[in-house]
Structure formats: structure tokens, C-alpha cells
Image 1 (cartoon, rainbow, N blue to C red):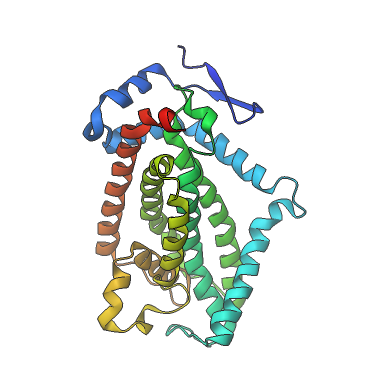
Image 2: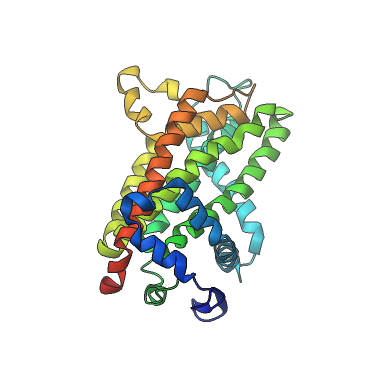
Length: 304
């Protein structure tokens, strides 16, 4: 079938290019080890970049279509989150960060919200992953539709929301502290392992969600637990040293603390060795998730 053939998506409002036969054949014949090749995965994503971008745009627009504030919600929602958590953890619990210059509630809000920017990308992606395939049963029957691109759509939508949240954070940082450290330019380096981690887990969970229908309920509890095991509303130094290793097992700990130090106060570059090791580990998770999804794809139609 020609590569410019189209297939209907959703309820027929949009049509997208079908997957080329050559790529379809390559994907299923290479085997798990051949598929888990960084160059192969990158070329596959690049081939479907237009499809992914169009689906992300469609998903974001549908999310706010018809709402009273429309696209203002991505700005309003972070502000409401800041107010709620600042009151709970700064006013009630009275948590403070060592790097705070003034010890004010406003500075606490910045420190906490910088952690939420990273955590929200992870939580939004992971919680949505198990339903990515189940919520689109019509696409499972379309052999030519690249289902493996759906996790990229989930991650892409979460990243769009993080851009809005980051804009709010930067504006607040300027207003409260009077400026932004130059290390903010290194912030994209923190998002690289985060995106790789989210993609890998999304491929795993999207596939597992087809076969284990209770997975979404389990993930709610796990993600909620990770929120408290990530130094978002408290400094890492507040955790007793004897149990601090538990937080170090959580990859979000490094990402949140590094991102916070890049954005706030004097600004501090990340530990390059730790960033390199974490990025390599997240890349392995990403490739393994892609290979697992490709390996289990053929069984989706028997279950959905």
C-alpha cells in the first residue's frame, strides 16, 4: 500500500497518513534486540513526527475546547496549585529550604512549584499510559496505524503543559527574586532523561494496560507514594541520612533537585556525572519499553 494512504482517527474528524509497509515489516521482523536500537527508534519516531505533532495538537485543543477559560487554563491551573500547596506546606507545616534568602512564603512557592513542573510531566504521562490503547480500540484493528506512537502523544501533551507551567514559574521568579540565573539555559538537559524515562514507562504501561485492566488503579497509589518520596515540598537535607538512600532510588529526586538549583537562588549546574549516568539509565528504559511494546503489539487485537 502506498505511503500516502490515509486512515481515519477517532470519530472521523481527522485523517492521518498510514504507516509505510517497509517500516511495518522492519519493525516486526527485527526482533527485540534489533528493535531496541537507538538509531532505529529515533528513525521510527522521526518518520512519524508529523503524525505525533498533529495528534498532540488535537489532544491539547480537545482538552480545553468548550471550557469557559479555554487555553487560559494551563496558566490558571498552575497558579491555583501554587496557592493550595503553599498554604498547606509553608503556612501549616512551615517547611523551609536552606537556600531561601528571605524565608518567605513566596520563595517557598517557587521552590515547591519548580519541583512540581518536573513531577507533573512524570505523573501525567504515567497515569494516562495504561488507557492509551484501551481508549482507542478502533485503532488496534488498523494494522497500518503505528500504535507505538501513542505514548509519544501522551508525553508530548504533558510537555506542552509543562511549558505553560515553566512560563508561570519564570515570571514568578523574576517578580519575587528580581531575576533568573543564567543556569536556566541548562534546564533542557534535565528534561532529556525525564522524557526518556516517561517514554519507556509509557510503552511498558500502555502494553501492560491492555492485559491488566487493574493497572490504572495500582498506578494511582504508586504515583501518589512517589509524590511524597520526591523532595518537592521539602528539602532533601530534611530527610534523615539513614533513610535518605530510599529517595536516591527514585530518579525523580535527582531531576527535581537539579532543576530547582538551576532555576532558583544563585543557580547551580547539575552534577554532570550523575546526569550522564541517569540519562544512560533512562535511555535503556526507553529502548526496553519500545521493544516490549513492539513484541506485544500483535496480541492487542485478541484482547481489546
